[in-house]
Amino acid sequence: MIVQDIVEKLGLKVCSGANGLNREIEGGYTSDLLSDVMGNADENHVWVTLQTHKNIMAIASLKELAAIVLVKGYEPEADAAEQSNEEGIPILSSEEEAFELTGKLYEIINQAK
Amino acid sequence: MEFKFAIEGGNFSKAGSASSEVKKILKQLNVNPKIIKRTVVSLYEAEVNVVAHAFEGNMNVDIDTDKIVVKIEDKGPGIPDIDQAMQEGYSTASPQVREMGFGAGMGLPNIKRNSDQMNITSKVDVGTELEIINYFG
Image (cartoon, rainbow over all chains, first blue to last red; front, side, top):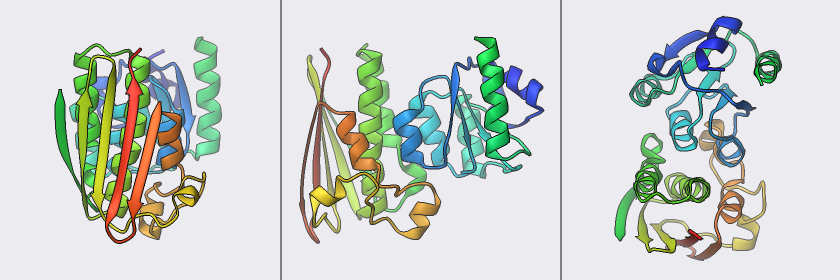
């Protein structure tokens, strides 16, 4: 399963990093605490959060995450979007809240396994 | 091999850049990916601590054939009670820093979990020195 698959299945908006839509997804993590994500998310995970500032890209890059999905229609700040484009790690956006979105992602990713 | 990176206190837009450089070097050296991952987590947390709490700092990296030794020194407020600071959930971060999702009191515990050796010394109103050692074998 790749990032493009969840974009299509969940109708997500691609805010930035479209050059990384073919990145492989193997799981996910939902949290708004950066150290929690740093300590517990893993490579090729999709990260669900409401944080929109540039540091989310530092985490995504260091952890080699597949993509970030912002909830409740949030959009990345300009410098976060810029780094997302540079690194080819997509930032996506969903109109849904974290609970609903995480539930759907969990189902889709597990079905694909 | 020795490398030195400057860390600016308060500049969150650059937080993680030193850790990212070290990650690139370790990848080029073909270090075991599991050890790179552990090292990156501990260095990022250490870097963010300097950005969030100190005025300025340095990350000094010494890579040997069998290990990486990183010393992060800062000029800043120091830590009055290191045992307390090591407790999961304890933080002195400002409300603004917490709103960004930092300051959850998970930084130092994350460093401890992701390093083979961690040594920390601090002087109040002077600064903090943190040493992280990870073995490649």
